Image (cartoon, rainbow, N blue to C red):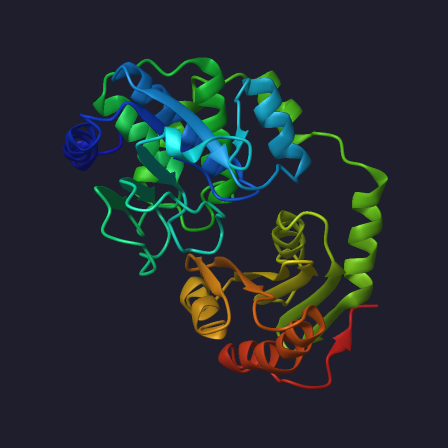
Amino acid sequence: MANTRESVRKLTELREAVAVTRRILVVTHDNPDPDSVASAAAFQQIFRHMDKEADIGSGGELGRSENRTMCRLMGFDLQSIYDIDLKSYDFFLFVDTQPGSGNNSLVMPEGSRFGIIDHHILGTDWPHDPSFADVRENYGATATIAYEYLLARNLKVDVPLATALYYAIRTETSDMGRGGTKADRDVYLKLHSKLDWEVLHEIVQSRVTANYFVMMKEAVERARRYGQALVVDIGPVRHPDIVAEVADSFMRLEAINWVMVWGWREQGIVFSLRHHLEPHAGRLARRLVEGVGSAGGHTQMAGGQVPVEGADLEERRLQFRRVIVPAYLKAVGQPTDNGIPLG
């Protein structure tokens, strides 16, 4: 079983940090994935066992059909941060995200106390020092950390939460094939005996609309191969997480070791990186958009945003295509011109 000693110590710190707290908002990243949602639900349960009122807030929406299905079947209630009074909360816990990371839209009331539980690269854009922080870059999923906290609190994990945490670790580590550590494997195997297999099947096999296949067809037509790298400009996107979904799909392409997928919304550019090989995707993503956007991630997967701010959308698109895409290809050691269509 996973070594929970660190989580026991951190749970004590968290309990002390919220000792005088009345109401907590557990914050996911915008357009949250299973890791963010399941982890938030786990900490909501932990806080309620501390006799603290806790809600879950997100600044986006659930785009992928699997994520919508998971929340519906698990009965998880995500509230929009735009529909609630943020001043009514006296503590904010960022789960699977960090203040200023660019993947959450929450602007805390000035002087707010907050905490962070995450497995992404340590951030630097916090408004001030957090009251609590547990950032484990060596973990494959925040859900693993969340489960260790549940064990440290001696809480029973019911079937819906166990199923959600299992699915979160499964998707975040690609069934332990991408960034999973011993701690992740231990929790993954422990949860394996606790979940609802019928519900899991319904999540994994959730139905999609015809527009999904139209979008995938367009992505194939727009894809360009540069040596062992693939770059896909998928055009306008409705949900930012479709960019990550396309990137995941193309990583199965034979002889491709690096994938960049990007698209745009009214707010700006969104992009995802997927790597089989070096360099570290998260650190590279940050370097690529330093000064114009924000990014983060792990060794093999990363994502980021380049907001419009100070320029119009067309300027940002040209900048991304003419500057950031070539910089990416150069960083992974692949040719920067003469991209070859897949077809």
